[in-house]
Image (cartoon, rainbow, N blue to C red):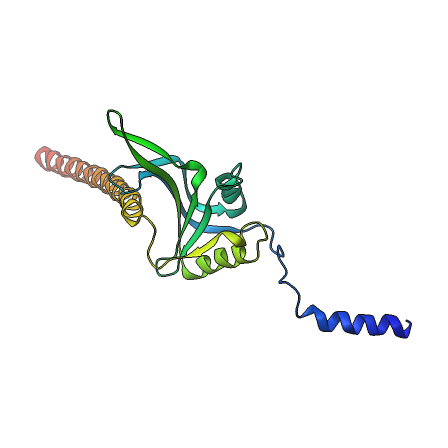
Length: 196
């Protein structure tokens, strides 16, 4: 190596620490959690869950973000992190519209997607993936409270209520089956005793 090349390499190494951070060293990310979307008026008087966008279990973040933010150039897009609750809210003004609550009376309405992470480490993994993504790191916003918390509480509490109702029905049927078996056994024992 020539002296000139060595000097240029040393200079490049020294200047490297002043360069921009590296992006896209992680290309895909899957997390465990739950995704729910809702259509709501801005005052949250009307809230409608969009069940076709709901997911639970392993979630492919890249696919979710691509679907949420596709075809939305020159629109307001946000990925809002709520550290206190381990919740991420996705907002895209492309989905803003109006809701006709009364005949010819329109309220502003929007669509939001909420991602509820199962643990702190999963939440941090999601955050780190977005921070290093050249495509999405400019969309990051941090808020103390969950945006449109009333809508978030509504769609996630409905899900929990449905889960508990289903589980209680399952336990009721199990109890009924158990009781029927017990009654049949008692009847069988009584008939055997009467025959003796």
